[in-house]
Amino acid sequence: MPSNNPTIVLTGDRPTGKLHLGHYVGSIQNRLKLQEQHDNCFYMIADIQALTDNAANPEKVRENTTEVVLDNLATGLDPEKTTFFIQSQIPEIAELTVLFLNLVTLARLRRNPTVKDEMKQKGFGENVPAGFLTYPVSQAADILFCNSNLIPVGEDQLPVIEQANEIVHKFNSLYGETFREIKPSLTDTPRLVGIDGQSKAGKSLGNAIYLSDTPQEIEKKVMKMYTDPDHINLNDPGKVAGNVVFTYLDAFAPDKKEVQELKNHYQKGGLGDVKIKRYLIEVLEDFIAPIREKRESLSQDPSYIKEILIKGTLKARESAIETMKKVRHAIKIDHF
Image (cartoon, rainbow, N blue to C red):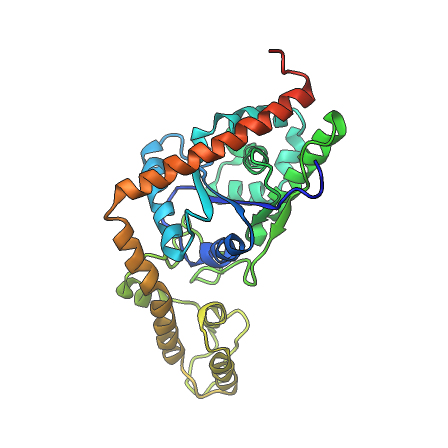
């Protein structure tokens, strides 16, 4: 395709639960920036992807469709600037997925680090559902159905973008220039550790602070945060590296100078864990409170949410139909 085509941004969430601070730093804050910089932005509720490991619990996926929309709207994603749509309502994505499956080997799918990590987390072993194993192919179709080429992601999703670009290059080499190379857009804090300090914050791991958490929930979670296990006495020098409290302060505290002063004090000794945790509680409540309040207000008008999704899905479908005309022509299956 011509290189002067406008940038098209696409991002999305699997509707398997409410979104948390890890989602915010890993993707949402970039979505907010990109919707101000580009005229063509799409946001996908990836319900088909969510079913790859929730096939026996479709109610969970359906219920959380609204939840992820509320979280994104509450943080500032604007339906006048970003097109909200539901993946399952765009059948062309499924058609494109089937065609892309012919361009990827089973061995390559098994080597994808993101898939390997998630398979391990979920304990699938050899009993991994085929849909789950092939979801990077589905994600390539998600990205390319509307000719998007800029994707805000966390660093854990970079292997998926890499595999999608392999599909782009393979398709173009076989059938002619049809798709553009996809570029990831990373945030300054591409991955946020969980409150336990052991891995990234995640819904399934139970170690995340949610964008809708109450003040009491925020306090409870922060007080449980991993700090420095050797910092036993107040006057002991403490370690900042690997200290989850300081990781969150770096990401969310507006006063970076004050955070640096706290780090210096902590490293010298004389600053207790409880004091820095109390400071973090204030920082996170200041950040989350307006999001939580806007979310609660939006949730009172379900017809507004439905209207956003219907309007956005119709617009996304128009783009999908145009893309598939080009794809079918390239593959020579435009028989009629």
